[in-house]
Amino acid sequence: MNEIANKIKETRLGLKMSQSELSALSGVTKTTIYNIETGRQSCSTQCLLKLCNVLNLQLKITENEKVKSNNIHNEVH
Image: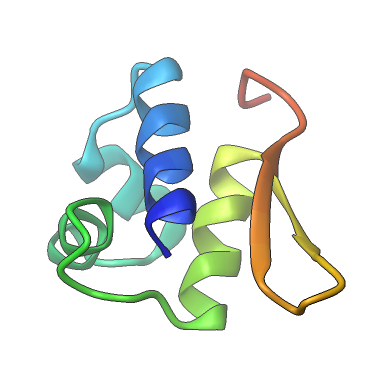
């Protein structure tokens, strides 16, 4: 999960978006976002989809069924 957590944080910071802003746009609490980004909490599929939607990230399932996150755009429209 660390790879995904790092990608979420990296993308959020690249967009100059605060955790509060991401929370407001995604419906995921600021505490949950903080806990995910710091590795204190794993992310449910529903939560992950909400965050990726706002951050414009695409999820891909690899052959060994681990979820990976790939940035498809560097800006939110």
